[in-house]
Length: 323
Image (cartoon, rainbow, N blue to C red; front, side, top):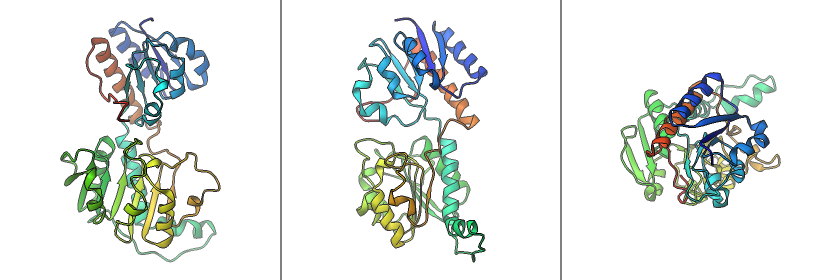
């Protein structure tokens, strides 16, 4: 094994590459860069590298047991945790890039306003060149919001909702540990209690064995009549059939999904035609916003220095837990 860092990324410019080279040199590493279109050429490097910085799970199948650290540039790592055989070295470190909070929080605010201000009511009539009458609207101001997930995404969303006048922001997490971004934080075991007083539910949960099907029909039925739902975490958390039924019946006033099961959503899936539903193709946290790209490279470089020194890495994932 050589002290090589193999980087397979599409978003890197020359300045980013220089920063990575400097961090690598400080730890005694050399770097080779590839794009996703060059993945076949990258495999020779991957077979001999100690560090791999990428977001393509299948690249791990080309790695040797000497791979010491896989740095994912994605926040979600469920694909890496679902298949232990991906890692030739069972002790290989895995880190996620928890730097998407700003861009995903802005997406949450965007779709929340679209729902509260009833934009779906106008989209189709305007496409038909009709001039619809105004609908009754609601506001973020004085609203009661619940965020499932109190990490980087949940905290950033809570801060922005607070700045727009939300009356109460409740967090739900595995531990229920308090955080200043939220008025209250409850453990996931008390989710049913929280749902009954939630006007606007936002899920930023990862896809783990514990979260699959968490928002089933029974739990959606606990939400007050006319509540809203946004999912920017993983589609596996939500029962999409139950969601469609709740939307079509009016029990839910609207929903916005940036994630689905499966992805892409099949063309014949009934969810496409659900009432008051905003669908986006998993784009809330992609690597196109400059700030997110900057933070992604910063985190990788800081971790590369830590790795070379044998220090704990930021964003270290417990693969047995899935996060």
